[in-house]
Image (cartoon, rainbow, N blue to C red; front, side, top):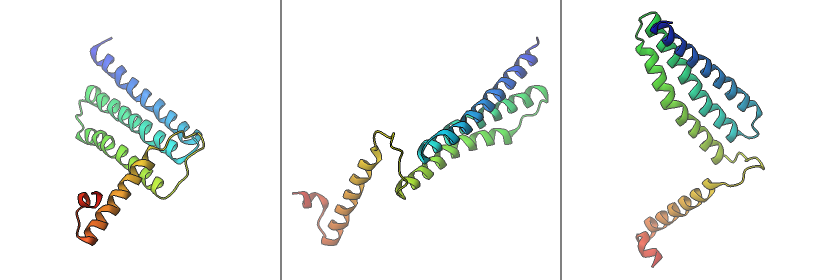
Length: 139
């Protein structure tokens, strides 16, 4: 087996693993109980699946066709940067709009953080209204 054949095999393996991850992601979207778990499956697994598949295609085109695709690299980088951020924002919007968690959820760490943030914002608003700094309000 030549070096090109080995590299093509690695590229095909990356594409295969990416396809398997996409199937796992789809199963997770179907099987998980609430929107938070489903979004986790959709963003994490599909980001990895698309990245692996595009990497495999990029390597295959580079080795077998001698094509260096800048679009492919930009696609990989774009997916890696935007998919997790978009998933995070969608989940944050779902949480703030009051979408219920499943009964299997053990701990809600974000509720404590948001309560502290709301309390801090109320203190800042009160200090602006009275002209007193928040440090002076506590004393």
